[in-house]
Image (cartoon, rainbow, N blue to C red; front, side):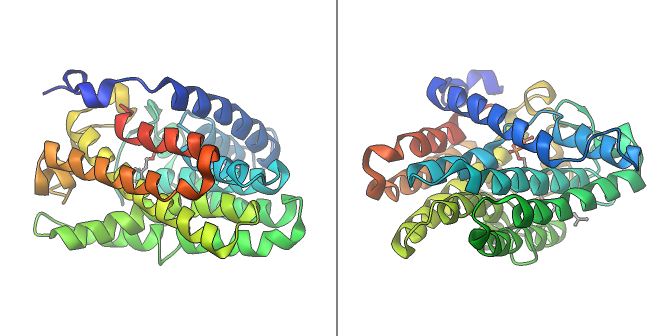
Length: 304
Ligand code: GRG
């Protein structure tokens, strides 16, 4: 079955798509201010960082941070540095993930991956540059300086050994013998941790209460796991054009995935259930939940 045959995946989500397009422009303007110009020295490093950051991408993590902050009536000046930092960290992880020593992919976001457009050493440094610039940005550009410590801490936890980096290590060791509980743990760390941190960063910037932060954490974690399940499905059903990277790699590499363990339909049901859980946890926001809910529903409908 092709992706286009699947009505549930191909149905457009105009509200979320319009919202993501608008927030993508907001994020890109901020990123352009935060990244050194491509003409600065060392030019090759900044060209590579900018090549990867501005090479497409849905800007989902910044959007989640901005929307969580907006929902709590927080200030954009307190969330935009964190939103930019999230995209820097995400982009660094993609650059390093594409390296021959990791997932070894020549394409990313529809064009040559960083090490192909530049070289391996530059790609490693571009990733390192983005990872560290993320924390510089949060700690020097957040309007309310009292927030920068908690924001930096949150990002370090989501992106680091207990989150994304640890998840990547578990993923490297994964195989077709990985069971459902192990797979969930890999996905929770490799992908859901940074997505949950995106929501939590927005909540922190919006001065969330403890209870609000807990509810938004449930939203972020459920949405994050659903996102990776859909990513697994898209790796089976998607085309290189839709995905902007090489499809079918999980099966070729003998990786544990939701479709491999449960089949496509059950994987879809699991993703849909997680999105319902995510949306339920937004009830405390009343009508202010609408945008976060639209983005959550878009996660299971997306085709790229
Ligand atoms: C430290 C050497 C070193 C490597 C780190 C941590 C890491 C490598 C990789 C992270 C693992 C990873 C790439 C997880 C996949 C997450 C995922 C589904 C990414 C795709 O996200 P989208 O669809 O991408 O939001 P766009 O391009 O739209 O931004």
